[in-house]
Length: 179
Image (tube, rainbow, N blue to C red; front, side, top):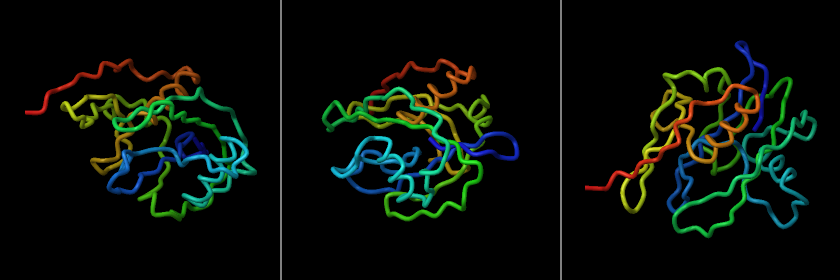
């Protein structure tokens, strides 16, 4: 999670993942990041490397604010136990973002205050083999697909809770059978 100062307060960096067949996170909104490679000494190094590779933002000189609690990723057809770590950084001035990999469709800054606007809170319908789940989400862009949900939502929920600005409790996923 990368923060920068903006005209109306802090902004958070989000990416839209590229659409790719076979990728369970295809097209989702997320923070920059990716899998730890064998040469990476730790998860923090991985987060910094992936951010640099995906959007051209070098975090090695940025202020490291801390680490959010790790979350376990769950997805149908994937093995359990995938641990996702989120490190929080502050950059006083961010250079222009440059999407540098086919894994990312776009990257943009979102005002943190926007995340709390009730009109932006939506139910995201996630397809499941049994039907659809309604999950809490936050619309962060103009495009219909620019909805933060799932792991990224959970990390934002944790972060905003730490700031004393909790998101409304909307965790009651309901399965709707496919007809």
